[in-house]
Picture 1: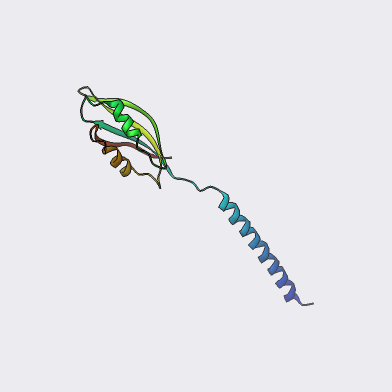
Picture 2: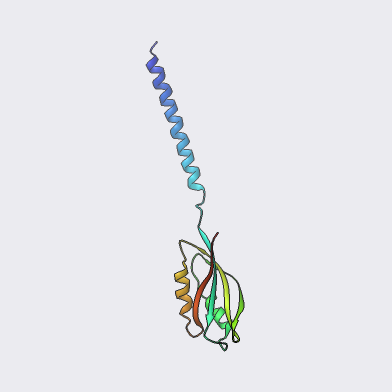
Length: 124
């Protein structure tokens, strides 16, 4: 009886089983959706003065569209001297939308927007 042959057969069988399991694991992992990193951002959008049309300002802000950007709730917050700022929330996919892009796009509406600040930034 040749003991070496038995070990070789067992090793080949163990190798075949291991390769099969690795293949099944790789297929299962490939089907699983990748985790998408998201962030919740709260922006303060400041108008030029108390005569700025805040409804139009909000329409302009919400008109900024991008893949991975979802606008949320908003409210007007008193700043002083009758001026109110727009505080607006959004959820972004980190790989697709950044705060720099949002600020740049919103400040393009320079008839209404004086400045944009990030009031809060939270990873989801």
